[in-house]
Length: 112
Length: 115
Image (cartoon, rainbow over all chains, first blue to last red; front, side):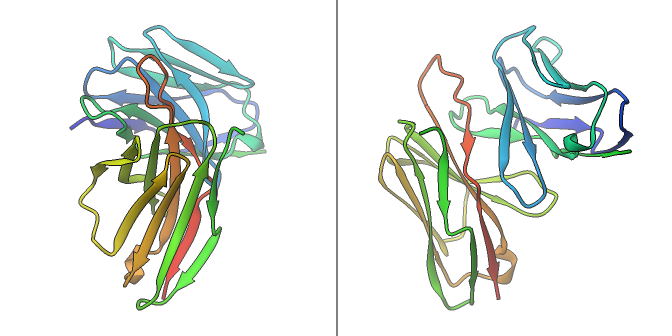
């Protein structure tokens, strides 16, 4: 079974600082998704990474994918309070079309 | 229309009740999903329908019964639930075609409380 590990699971950072969230997965996949979830809300799609070396940026967030290392990163630049949320990475599962394997999520809190 | 809708937003039910959750999408997606999410955990896959046929059932208890009347609608029928079934129930849809990203788009969820 495909395993997805995210770290850190909890991240408390000051506004204006930079940090990176890591997502490792255990078997080959050529794509990866990042989602954001606010408390009590649903999952919002942030990034779809479809190939090795893919890099996408939206505002203060930048995501990348290295399929050879089975690693994706979500980099936060100059954090602001509005980025406080839980971030999940998800990897499509092997031979089972439609199945997504989620990381445990990174709960990010940005404080002034 | 680029969204997945779910009704109701909140549901409180007793253990002897029968209720249904509804999900709808008009993006032409051919796959629809039910997930259960407990607080501070990732979503857990329950069921997947592709082309209106059940393709994945994650050994979900029979008190949860999915139904896909057509390619735009997905229901989850609930009967004799337990308090531990209280959770956020998320519906999602995706294109299900080769070459597409097959990104899953999530609805706003139904917050279910079982008393």
